[in-house]
Image (cartoon, rainbow over all chains, first blue to last red; front, top):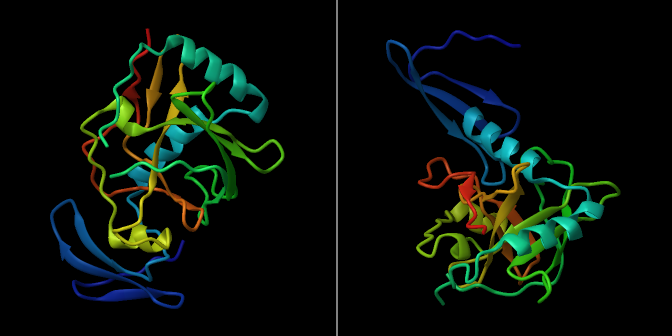
Length: 85
Length: 131
């Protein structure tokens, strides 16, 4: 891992067009600004990990899908809320 | 938020979190699967998902899409988009829907994203009302 020492308002640049700036330093947290092109995803690590875990728990092998749908359909309490148009 | 029907192959340029290498999913919706929609991975042995209209899980569902998300879908505010919440079945027979990170598809471009908002009032494991 590359390690830098930065002061408030100092930045580092990654590749072509990603800039990370230290905005404020508190006692136990640092406020950071990220500038990047719209097609570059920037997420908090814990949010991304939470969604990754949810996807992993939901993923099935294609062969298992028909049985899963049948099982879920048997369990659906009719009527499952009708969407508003 | 109008729901639109979609059939065909949707491209997720960034994949889905945890499955970043899987970009194409076949969307399957038919009366014998109602109210569920299947996202079948196009890769051999790749992941597939069961999903549901999030408004069937929470009638007041109010998701937000920012400009960056719209750009990723090549969509604008007037486009009718398809919203899906991925369903996870549990060992105990219960199931949950991911309202925190919905899948959004633009039928006009057949592009899809999974929305990862910085903040959300919704859970990744919202209980699905099963009997």
